[in-house]
Amino acid sequence: PTPETFAMSFEITPLDEHNQALLNNVHPADWRNPTPADKYNLVVIGGGAAGLIVSIVTAGLGGKVALIERNLMGGDCLNVGCVPSKAVIRSARFRSDMLRARELGWRPVDGVEVDFAAVMERMRRIRATISDDDSVQRYTDHGVDVFIGDGRFVDNNTVEVGGARLKFRKAVIATGARAICPPIPGIEEAGYLTNETVFNLTELPKRLAVIGGGPVGCELAQSFRRFGSEVTILEMMPQFLVREDPDAADILRRALEREGLRLALNAKIERIESGDSGKVIHFTIGGKAQTVEVDAILAGAGRAPNVQGLGLETVGVEYDEGTGVKVDDKLRTTNRNIFAAGDICTPYKFTHTADAAAQIVVANALFMGRSKFSRLVIPWATYTDPEIAHVGMYEADAKAQGIELDTYTAPFDDVHRAIAEGEEEGFVKIHCRRGTDKIVGATIVASHAGEMISEITTCIVHGIGLGKIASVIHPYPTQAEAIKKCAGLYKRTKLTPRVAGLIRKWLSFSR
Image (cartoon, rainbow, N blue to C red):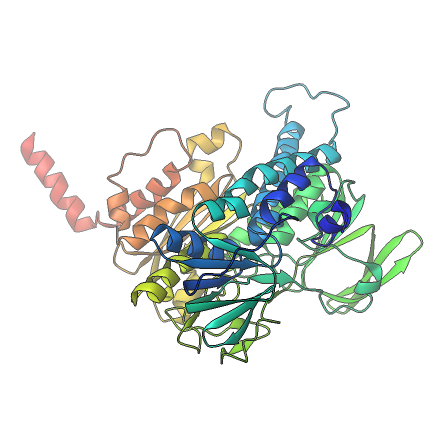
């Protein structure tokens, strides 16, 4: 194939210097697979976050490992997920700051407008630069045998790829998940974007509909609105980020409304039609029919695990086409010699979760370890503005399990750094078991909530109570002071009337 058709086969366009550099790193056209070793400690199918970590850790420990990838090394995160989306979000956030110029003491400059093509070129350049870390050459240099092609199990200790047969002691399935088309009549004919194609855009859609109010949908909807698109979000549930704290989701809803997005909650999409002037989405809210006409549709609702074509039936690995490969708490499949990690088998579709799961697999597959996925404490963040970050239990989780909570909340309109930066909307909310300072969960809504949640995650992992945070000096002024304010609220609960009375008596006596 020509370089152009080669790039398009992976839905990577345009073929500029940056995308060419990306492909040279993560799927070089002239790559020749190595001669297989007699036997591998591990054969890994899938070169996304989980597969990369399993491979490089195993090689670093001196094991013999083969890594098979049919598409692009780095998986979703590098190519169509975390990296490109955060680059785009950064450009969008700067545009938002410019629109607040007068509020921050600047005279707005006339004629400033987004150069969307330049935004996307910057994204491609950043992605290409970071792709060095996930490149075929880097993993080869670290002792990993990299095979490009479709891997398929042919028996209980063999995977076939490109006509070669790789013998293994243990194997790991890390093939991830993919975006799917929502079952809406007319959407295929009208055409739509997903997270796998939206970063190929070089022209800004004047009118954009985003189907799904999850993290991807909200992040990109806000960004495209800031670039100047007229954006409508259609969400079938009564709130965005349906799994999140309702107070947090409500702050995001208000922020999106202020920025001029059209929000359609409780929306049932009936059909999509293509017209002369655009794509027409027909939907109902509470039985009332409505329409919106747009130039582009971004489908952000629905992913499916990549279980097809792996020969899983041949080796007795049970799977479900909706939830993925079945694993136990040690991430072992129904075949004791085959493990799985990442989006193919876990409900938490995050790169950092795939990383942690990969570490579990290495310990359990190579060293008969006893690491368990259920022991992980997994934080996550949605990178809207403000960001929403969470770890541990929500109030609804605790109620469902019969756990009583004490909840401590510090709003940012009482945090001096947040006031100084004009970012007062948001809060830190920390849940403790009733009558104790044991932290069981927390939600943060703030401009940089994702940077703040790790302090609380550390406390949960290592059993550090909220009372101990009160004794930790936090720099002033920082937004992280809100965490210490929550600790201060806990400490005040210890100042009961009896204790307060004893303190007053002691101070009176000591004068």
